[in-house]
Image (tube, rainbow, N blue to C red; front, top):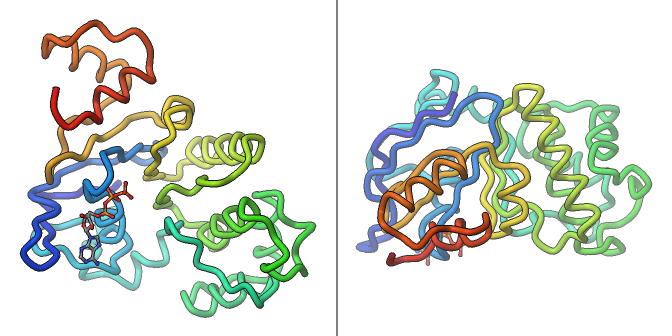
Length: 244
Ligand SMILES: Nc1ncnc2c1ncn2[C@@H]1O[C@H](COP(=O)(O)OP(=O)(O)OP(=O)(O)O)[C@@H](O)[C@H]1O
């Protein structure tokens, strides 16, 4: 579904991605993990087509994302790490703004449905400035979902959301994956990784060190002669450590 092949990216002389290759399957929630500054957001920006890699290719459903960009953009929904909304507009107006900006041609009925999916329908005519941080996060997600994309790219989408809402959103993500959507998810939240990610990929020092399930990560670490891992939190922590 998503094939990332030998992707490199530099910012000036700073080498960030140095040959990242990954295969992400349809219907899975893939947790893209890595220490701060590893390049997760950079890789997601490349997948959104807004950043062109210095080298390498990415295909989505067989389309080269930097050649068939227009078609690819209709296929993806992106939840950025920072909230990208207007405080002076209502919930409905924010959705309309993004639909126009992204040229996704979404009906107002579908916008309302996307709000219902993240339980924000009561705030439909409310100005964004009146909403809590968590509600803004939910709207950030609704913006990405309203055109019903096959692929969702989510950069720490639940930061600052209360626990109940986070659980609801996690359940919703699982239902989207069960319906065949492909979700690439970055988070530093261990409970989310355990609960929703089918597989993880660990990005470190410019490359992918590991891909697989948490169970496979356990045997990967054990084979390296590490102390036996007791629980999943410890496992994820060990996977993300710079040096082992
Ligand atoms: N536009 C840019 N220009 C120059 N350097 C950048 C730019 N964007 C990111 N970087 C640098 O590239 C590196 C990777 O950043 P990126 O945000 O992709 O990492 P990350 O893994 O998402 O980090 P975090 O977990 O902290 O969100 C960092 O050192 C960052 O300072």
